[in-house]
Image (tube, rainbow, N blue to C red; front, top):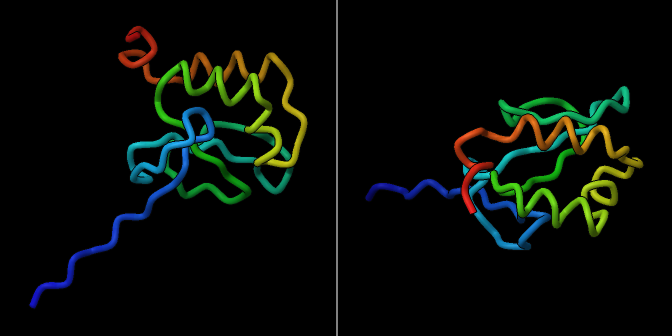
Length: 94
């Protein structure tokens, strides 16, 4: 009998939906305290996940869920940088 591989699920901080980890974008705070978007999903540090949608980033930013999850205050220019790093094809959609 073939064992089915378990798909790791993570919760999006924007829409609060559980989704497969591979479908989400990880935001990570490095041990040095730098917050950035983790494209590989393997960067060291404390991480949180959001859907690759601008609406989820906005919702998570507005409710301060990202800074609570990463346990660090997040400046508005950092949100601007994260907004710019969102995949282009997704940011243009509804």
